[in-house]
Image (cartoon, rainbow, N blue to C red; front, side, top):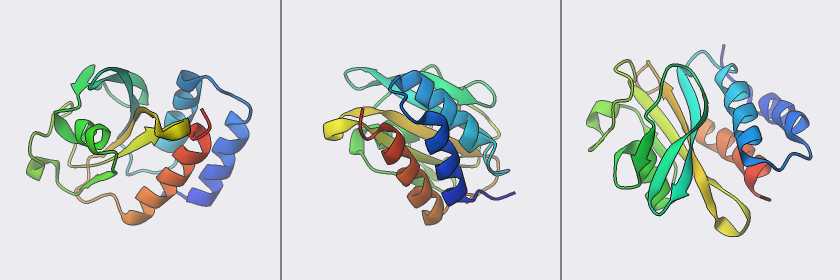
Length: 151
């Protein structure tokens, strides 16, 4: 099964309409995205909780890392640069943090609220190499902007 981004976006929009609680929104998005595609092995959020610091938020899948500084790993790079990190081979990413030994590829998207405020990052891991594409980046970015952009 491969994700249908327009349908997924419509489903998430209907489920989150009127909700403003960041954690509730993260939980709903993580669940819906995780179950939309067989490539998605771990799907979740890391929240900005202090200067240059992320902590795990709502997720689906096995355990995740609890704390990630902006200076480390793929999630830290997305938070630090404000840019999507599309990583076809996590072993080739300098400073990759191996929260799970099965992860082969990863996409991490920064999550912005109103005025460009960084809320956190949205992380999806796959046990397949090169599992993510620009289509994933575009589709997920659209969903994240529509859900969190006004907060």
